[in-house]
Length: 431
Image 1: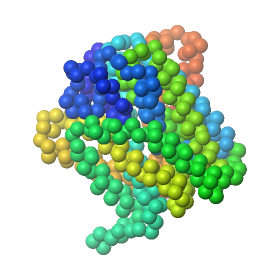
Image 2: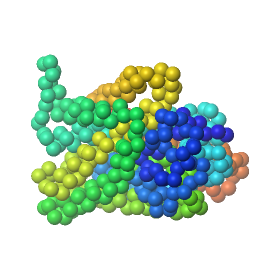
Image 3: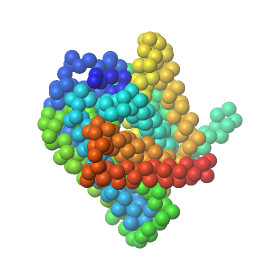
Image 4: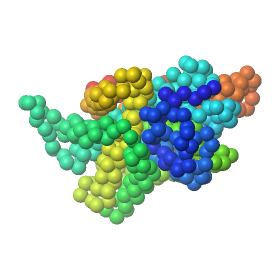
């Protein structure tokens, strides 16, 4: 099976690329700036581990305290359970790729398992997830800038625009030049700041709690059944990097170490997520907002470091997140996209559409909860299990592994149904 370049476009954009990439790789021109598809990987263990950490580290770190506050202390069990399940499904992706050396990307796995429909299904879920994450970036920017500069508003032609909405529009205008770039190579390096940003935010929040007079005195609830669906959905959102794992695996020089890379990446990210959740809950208890940065006092240096890091990082990453979708659309209309004006129109229209969604549904926590329950669970739990069962043929014979996968599927479907329903009901209720 030949890997199709039109689908090799998701979440690989945030990785550090290997300097020894095969320059004769037959990749479409519009992808060369942000994707590596070398036929023989040469990336070292530690570089791949850093890439794995970068893929898993994201804005989810801001919402884990809110997730813990929603479900109570015992909901941490679900964080560790989801971490274990998604680690296991990452290994299932490795097994799928071992079964067919021509598999290069996540959509390739879908096609190998279920044909053309499988490729389309996988690509659709990934692109939709990217689109909503980019939209979440705008909401996050509006919330945090409004927190830094409260009470600001704008008036245009007699229409009053509130602080959050105004900042979303301003950030979109700042982002616009980056999204019009054809060569994303320079921005790809900025995406590697995700790991550093996560540790900076964690350290700043701990410093604020320990030395800025807030302390860690809140007791919180042991369990809140009503908030469990939201909490679990947000935990699932933290582990939505599976579409990038095939690229990590392909890039490795010694592919036998892939499972160790995954273990290290998941372990460090889970520790980070758990620590910031615990710190945040002990600091603010049930008063936690959808992003912990919104609870931080803006007059403290450590708080400002966390908030500024939170504000700058999504602006740098927005174009990288949306570029795969742009290139998918441009590839579909390749003959028209030779005209620069058409390409500019497509990119601008996509940006405007995310702004419209962000203004209509300005609820970061609820939107990310929906993404986690519906899209992340599907891409990171359900699809790896189903594809593995089909490719390996294990579904034809019942055994211990099939039983485990069956339990994971039931677990994933339960999160998808309950979490998606809860998120939609809460979003509709807030509109």
